[in-house]
Image 1 (cartoon, rainbow, N blue to C red):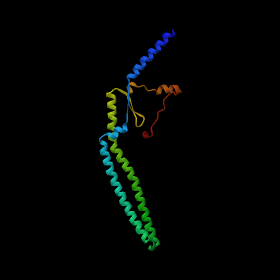
Image 2: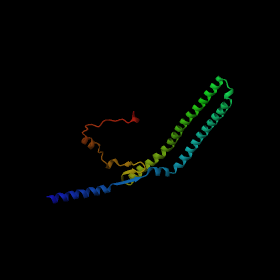
Image 3: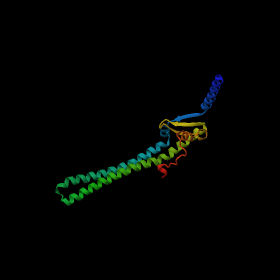
Image 4: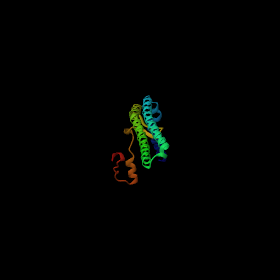
Amino acid sequence: MKTLLKLTLVAILLVSSNSLSAQKMGYLNTQELLYSMPEMDSVQIKTEKFSTEIREMLEIMQVEFNNKLAEYQKQEATMSDAVRELKGTELQELRARSVSFETSAKADIEKEYTSLMQPIIKKLQDAIQKVSKDNSFVTVFDQATGSLVYFDKSVLTDVAPLVRTYLGIKEPVKTTTPAAK
């Protein structure tokens, strides 16, 4: 009886290991692929051009501030209190505008880069999906992020109900992501 049980167990393990090995899993490095795509040259050029325009504007603002500061410092001793206060306020406002412009410019550069990258990222994601399906991969992992970039839902099982049962959870709680609010 024990021998029959052992043989049955070995047979089950052999069958399950054969079916497991038939499922293909893969990996890739999305960062390497992304930065190897020819479209990235265009993104680099457009982002650099956009950044250069902003840097030039910042330099113009800095030169204006430096000139007004030098003039203020040169004439400060001969200025009346009212003129000194007016010129000081003007310098502070000029500096504040410069800082505000720099802050919004950084956000604009990031926004521009993101908008240029979105179609390229979509193209890469679509390619990963197509190649994975066409080559019968069940799962594909990303080396760059350590995350899953593709999985075939039709051959995988959602284990959440089993985990809920194990944890004694009756009903799943409906969650909303911060983006959905």
